[in-house]
Length: 399
Image (tube, rainbow, N blue to C red; front, side, top):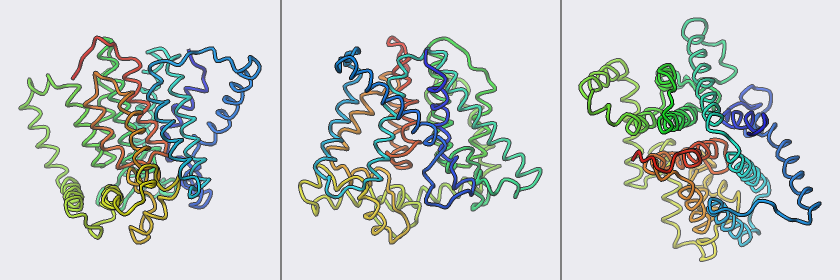
């Protein structure tokens, strides 16, 4: 059993868009100063100080032995530390502090899962899905039936496109899609493997939320989830599914064409490495390919250990002509090099459930181009995926 603080912080970690900037209380310089950071920074500081004090009192005798399951985490932290040491002259202290914060939060939640019961983990996932979905539906009702400007100051939706993209408690609709759908899949997968039921209402909440979010990632993730959750049902009801898909296209053809154009532009950018196609293409993949293709121009030390924590912002800013300062995976490779990338893969794939390795890999492939490593979304999604390994019966094989 874990305390209420653990459960509260886990749920708050999914609320990645609740910050002073969103509420228009402070300027954009506080955009990453989220509610999760406010609560967890104080709690984690006292938590680790308490652990350290206990170790000092007992002569640094660690009661818990290092387990085999800790190996990916240890290797990741080791390689990351080596990269930081070798590039310490060019690191940015604020970026380093932000990364350390999320690593501490991850270690706290990862070890805390050992104390969680299955029903507690499922309840946490359910709370995230239900709270997010209900809030998205509520904002949509207010937008369409009451006044579209009532909630505009809270930035709960993006109205720059033909249809508004509702994003709940996240910074953007694509982030909300990752949080809702991945938590939903993990909840459904754990329920099925343990012969439990979650109710049809939860499935409907997720479907409605995905439509309201109007995010390409939402549709991709939901389809990817259903492919593994209902593969047998797809074969039995393929005609019904075809008609349902056709109906979706008829009633949403405008937005779907818009998504297709975006994806086509991204594909062209990847094939041609053209930086002038669209901001969407740049932020998702251009930085990654530019860093890889520029490896021969970097020194051996920079290739292996990177250029330093926080140094990627200036590189991306120059690469995109002042449009962006974060390139997600590309930024991470630039800052930590091959050593950091190898450590990151060891961490993720070492903690993935073998029963859901294909699903997890697909989600991760989308995640790394939509979230940076020093961000709430990244670590929340990883913790959800790692929960499948923590609680999944070893004898169950779904893929």
